[in-house]
Image (cartoon, rainbow over all chains, first blue to last red; front, top):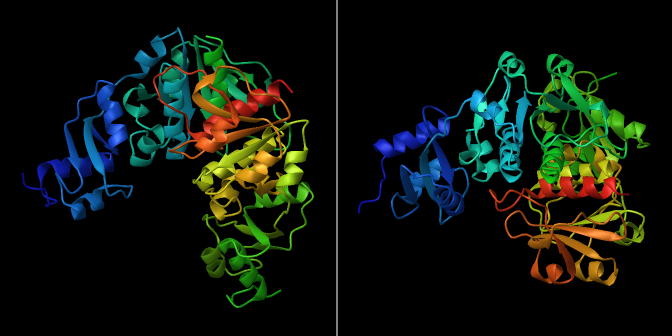
Length: 229
Length: 229
């Protein structure tokens, strides 16, 4: 078999488009992430191993991480809707309001899988959950966790109780089900409009810091919610 | 007052050395982080405001983040010892074993402050807690949280119970005091030698992911430990 060496190769073109975030496909990197996806029932469109299926040189222009045993897997981008995520009331869903760091978005997708949330809803202003950095931070959970965009209007119309963290909130655990946990922008927090419609709770802390990183807050609340489910 | 415009200026030289991690000083970026540090009792050696104390051009060569209202603050690097951290038995301490990502190290320093841990002990192989990325992720907590290097031998000799997370651990909450919570490398986890000396506990999860990000695990366990203190 000939190693692919040309950028013009149609599979390479699709991988490049997927990395740019164009179209209906995503790229996973690394043997472990690809194996996990396949075990999870995702059939790859293509898997390219560095130096075997593709020249080292071309591979290195595509991969985000350096590895002599590199693999790239092209998969169909999972599709779901906000309505499908909001319909599940036996657990909680997550809504992100302007979470700008793709590492935070991906980490929260991983947490959603770990603690069996219905999915992650992306309000306007969030980083792309299907971009390379978010996919990497999700550790493959991007394929097994429903993720969909949502507007403030859709979220409010769904009539699921909203729960957000705020300094002024009550120091009580989050609900186990039938709720959307809303996490806000790294600097500004959750928008005023959503706060007005949310039950506010606070994570008990020492007072030595003003706030937590959004992914840390999500980890704590999702673990608590799972623990009482 | 003249704006500093020369790289040869002695304060600029000290800032550059601090950013490189040389010597006994660290740099905080941003008005809020600097104000927090001053409120916390830290007297800056110098504060430089972009366009006021220092030319925009020179400022931009030093700052990690782009901001038209940028400020850089030079502070003495806080000094503490592993022995001082390990002496506090009314709370828990944290030990990081080969945590390589400076964002994870900084986030865990911020969590240590939030949940009143005695401090963060850095075993060999950890990212520099005083580097620019870790300082930024700590959101200023690097100044208020004791951080010190430690060897495996020193940690074991201190005779404080060690607690580590492992898939095979018991699904019980962490202790509130008189313990060191050990968190391991992003890929390989906690080293075998330390695992052998640790009580193992597991964070109850859905089984849809194999593990959590190390900072997520720390967030969950530190919040639990604080909650029962």
